[in-house]
Image: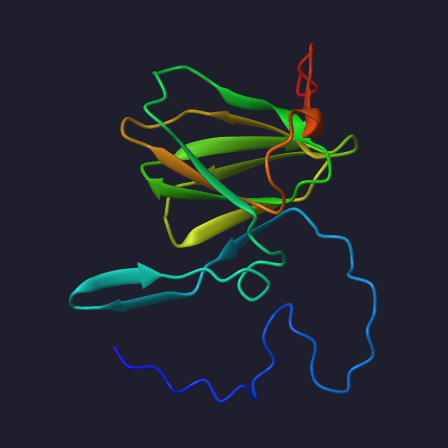
Length: 155
């Protein structure tokens, strides 16, 4: 498994190019994406660098595991905190609602991430036995960021 040397000449996500005018960042969009993954006969490796592979600095990492059959997690939005969810092991489903659109995603590979911008409601369901959900967050934990719903906006 060899990679070309990083000369710094390539444009990298989230890094301004020398001499480029500074512009405000565009709002993030809900998206499912592939993480950089390197595979050979020894197995696979994925590495994630903030502001390069994902569009924010990573301020907090947490993971959800040992979820009982039929249980749900989240059922909230997270203020201005952007998050990337990754199924490190097993699988689970993510339902998102942004006020105008309802979308469902199945995460089942550790080489795949789901970017959820702040203010989007999410609910995690259908955890397979042994599933592990890792979350990369753009801000440190603050209880005031969490906005639970007393009525499920998904219906």
